[in-house]
Image 1: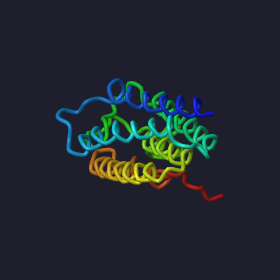
Image 2 (image 1 turned 90 degrees about the vertical axis):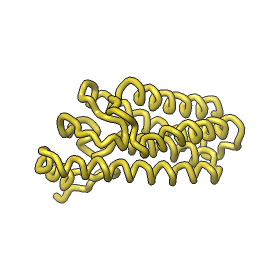
Image 3 (image 1 turned 90 degrees about the horizontal axis):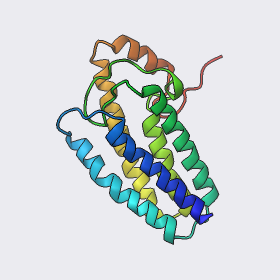
Image 4 (image 1 turned 30 degrees about the horizontal axis):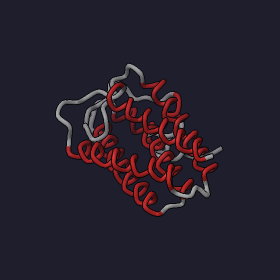
Amino acid sequence: MRATFFIADLVCFAGFGWAMFRHFLPAGRPKPGMLLTGAVVPIFAGLHLWAALTRPLPGALAGVILYAAGAALFWGAIAVTRGRHLAACFQNRMPETVVVTGPYRYVRHPFYVSYLLVWTGGFVGSGWWPLAITVIVMGTIYFSAASLEERTMLNSGAREEYGLYMRKTGRFLPRLSRT
C-alpha cells in the first residue's frame, strides 16, 4: 500500500506542477501571493512525499481515495478550461469567460478544491500532524486566492453573470439545491 500511496501522491503533485507551467498563463510579474504559493508548495510537497516514504500510513487507503478524488477533479477542471487562458493564483487577471461547465457546475473553484483534497489525503493517510499544518496553510492561501478572484470578477463586466453563478454554486463545497 505504501507504493500506491507514494505514487498517487507523486502523480498528483506532478500534475499540479505541470499545470503551473503549461496550463495557467503567466500574467506578467508574479504577485506576492503567487510567490508565496510558489515557495511553500515545493517544500510542503516534499514533506508529503517524505512522509509517504518514511512515516507509518494508518489511513493509506483513505489517503489514496482522497488523492484519486483530487486528481479526478483537477483533470476535469483542466479539460473544461483548456484554451481559456486562466491565470495562476493571485495574478488578479480577469478570465475571458465565466466557466460553468464540468466541475464548475458544482463548485466555483475546483482547482483549489482538488489541491485541498490532495493535501488532506497526505495528512489522512499518514496521520502525521505536520501535514495537518500544510492543509491549514494551503487552505488559507486558497481561500485568499479565491476571495481575490471573486472580487476581481465582481468588479468586471461579468459581474452580473458571476453574481448569479455565485448564488447557484458553492465556493468550495457543492451548494445543496432547494427542491
